[in-house]
Image (cartoon, rainbow, N blue to C red):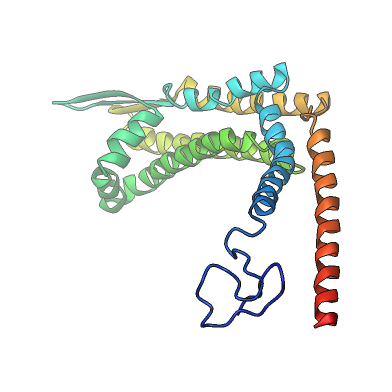
Length: 271
């Protein structure tokens, strides 16, 4: 069982009243003000610890003019994915397909509707189209992975002032470039295979959007390097008054605890 906070009396199971049976102090409200002050001190101490982290996040977004430019550039690779990444044209006797392929087409027509039937039929259908459509499927997957890295760039920018922030930002953009290049290569193989097999019926080409995605990722890397070289100091809020107040309060509490221990020791000695 617990002890009385004032006199140290060991409470028993039968001591169900709110008052201590020995000294009569209210057990619930004894040192109520001190406990409230202690909670306030803990909240203030947490604020002192968290404020530098909050300042770093704010600095990453709007700390300098370059940070604001980077915030805008982080959205550019995502926007470029909505431009035509590739173009295909199929001239059949009763039907003509002339379409641009972008991230919107891939997500809406393929992922949302799960329309993989034609692709899998072409992969399993014949040796002639198997290699081509395997690479077509890979090109779509690589585009989606590049889009994921473009999206991840935005939240990770908020911690770019951390020790590994610069390396993380460059790595994310580099991975976006790598998967975009892999997508272009995969589509090029798909395109060359179908052109070789159906030269008079099929034609295709890489769209301008694919190259603009790569340029956008490179721009993000360049702006990160520029911010790194700028080496602007993070301006923290002045928390010296809070720290001084906390230190003073801790000293006061230490003195109160020492005095309480001394009184309890004397009471036990006299008892």
